[in-house]
Length: 111
Image 1: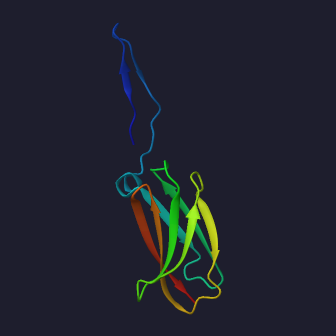
Image 2: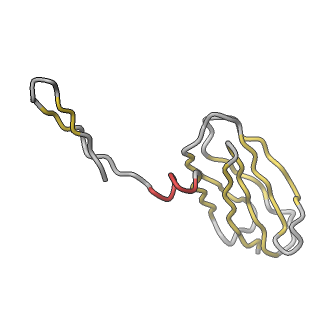
Protein backbone atom coordinates (compact mmCIF):
# COMPACT_ATOMS: atom_id res chain seq x y z
CA UNK A 1 0.00 0.00 0.00
CA UNK A 2 1.15 3.53 -0.58
CA UNK A 3 0.00 7.12 -0.68
CA UNK A 4 1.59 10.34 -1.83
CA UNK A 5 2.23 13.47 0.18
CA UNK A 6 2.36 16.80 -1.62
CA UNK A 7 3.94 19.76 0.14
CA UNK A 8 3.34 23.19 -1.38
CA UNK A 9 5.81 26.11 -1.21
CA UNK A 10 3.71 27.70 1.52
CA UNK A 11 4.14 24.58 3.71
CA UNK A 12 0.63 23.20 3.34
CA UNK A 13 0.48 19.50 2.68
CA UNK A 14 -2.06 17.14 1.24
CA UNK A 15 -2.21 13.33 1.10
CA UNK A 16 -3.57 11.19 -1.72
CA UNK A 17 -5.85 8.22 -1.19
CA UNK A 18 -4.19 4.97 -0.09
CA UNK A 19 -3.65 2.65 -3.08
CA UNK A 20 -2.90 -1.10 -3.05
CA UNK A 21 -0.05 -2.21 -5.28
CA UNK A 22 0.25 -5.75 -6.67
CA UNK A 23 4.02 -6.29 -6.52
CA UNK A 24 3.81 -9.60 -8.44
CA UNK A 25 2.25 -7.86 -11.42
CA UNK A 26 4.84 -5.06 -11.34
CA UNK A 27 7.74 -7.52 -11.21
CA UNK A 28 6.38 -10.12 -13.63
CA UNK A 29 4.33 -7.82 -15.85
CA UNK A 30 1.41 -10.23 -16.32
CA UNK A 31 -0.97 -12.12 -14.02
CA UNK A 32 -2.71 -14.97 -15.82
CA UNK A 33 -5.48 -17.14 -14.35
CA UNK A 34 -6.92 -20.26 -15.99
CA UNK A 35 -10.19 -21.94 -15.03
CA UNK A 36 -11.39 -24.56 -14.68
CA UNK A 37 -8.15 -26.41 -14.13
CA UNK A 38 -8.34 -29.36 -14.86
CA UNK A 39 -10.53 -28.66 -17.88
CA UNK A 40 -12.55 -30.87 -20.22
CA UNK A 41 -14.15 -28.66 -22.84
CA UNK A 42 -13.64 -24.93 -22.39
CA UNK A 43 -10.70 -23.11 -20.80
CA UNK A 44 -11.27 -19.57 -19.55
CA UNK A 45 -8.30 -17.22 -19.35
CA UNK A 46 -8.29 -13.91 -17.51
CA UNK A 47 -5.28 -11.67 -17.09
CA UNK A 48 -4.00 -8.36 -15.88
CA UNK A 49 -0.98 -6.75 -17.43
CA UNK A 50 1.12 -3.83 -16.33
CA UNK A 51 2.13 -3.41 -19.98
CA UNK A 52 -0.53 -2.58 -22.54
CA UNK A 53 1.18 -0.70 -25.34
CA UNK A 54 1.23 -3.62 -27.80
CA UNK A 55 -1.04 -6.40 -28.94
CA UNK A 56 -0.15 -9.78 -27.51
CA UNK A 57 -0.28 -13.46 -28.29
CA UNK A 58 -1.38 -16.53 -26.40
CA UNK A 59 0.30 -19.84 -27.20
CA UNK A 60 -1.12 -23.28 -26.41
CA UNK A 61 1.83 -25.62 -25.87
CA UNK A 62 2.05 -29.34 -25.18
CA UNK A 63 4.04 -29.53 -21.94
CA UNK A 64 5.77 -32.86 -22.62
CA UNK A 65 7.19 -31.88 -26.02
CA UNK A 66 7.19 -28.08 -25.97
CA UNK A 67 5.34 -28.13 -29.30
CA UNK A 68 3.12 -25.14 -29.99
CA UNK A 69 -0.34 -26.38 -30.92
CA UNK A 70 -2.19 -23.10 -31.40
CA UNK A 71 -1.53 -19.36 -31.33
CA UNK A 72 -4.13 -16.69 -30.64
CA UNK A 73 -3.79 -12.95 -31.20
CA UNK A 74 -5.08 -10.77 -28.39
CA UNK A 75 -5.77 -7.13 -29.19
CA UNK A 76 -4.69 -4.36 -26.84
CA UNK A 77 -7.16 -3.77 -24.02
CA UNK A 78 -8.54 -7.34 -24.01
CA UNK A 79 -8.27 -9.10 -20.64
CA UNK A 80 -10.16 -12.37 -21.05
CA UNK A 81 -10.60 -15.14 -23.55
CA UNK A 82 -12.08 -18.63 -23.85
CA UNK A 83 -10.67 -21.45 -25.95
CA UNK A 84 -12.00 -24.93 -26.67
CA UNK A 85 -9.79 -27.76 -25.42
CA UNK A 86 -12.37 -30.47 -26.18
CA UNK A 87 -10.35 -31.91 -29.10
CA UNK A 88 -7.08 -32.16 -27.14
CA UNK A 89 -5.99 -35.52 -25.79
CA UNK A 90 -5.72 -35.87 -22.01
CA UNK A 91 -2.48 -34.47 -20.69
CA UNK A 92 -0.65 -31.45 -19.39
CA UNK A 93 -0.49 -28.26 -21.42
CA UNK A 94 0.91 -24.76 -21.04
CA UNK A 95 -0.75 -21.47 -21.86
CA UNK A 96 1.91 -18.84 -22.53
CA UNK A 97 0.98 -15.18 -22.86
CA UNK A 98 3.43 -12.76 -24.45
CA UNK A 99 2.86 -9.01 -24.41
CA UNK A 100 5.33 -6.10 -24.57
CA UNK A 101 8.32 -8.46 -24.34
CA UNK A 102 6.88 -9.80 -21.06
CA UNK A 103 5.65 -13.36 -20.75
CA UNK A 104 3.74 -15.55 -18.35
CA UNK A 105 3.22 -19.31 -18.59
CA UNK A 106 0.65 -21.36 -16.66
CA UNK A 107 0.11 -25.11 -16.86
CA UNK A 108 -3.29 -26.75 -17.06
CA UNK A 109 -4.52 -30.33 -17.21
CA UNK A 110 -6.90 -31.61 -19.87
CA UNK A 111 -9.13 -34.43 -18.55
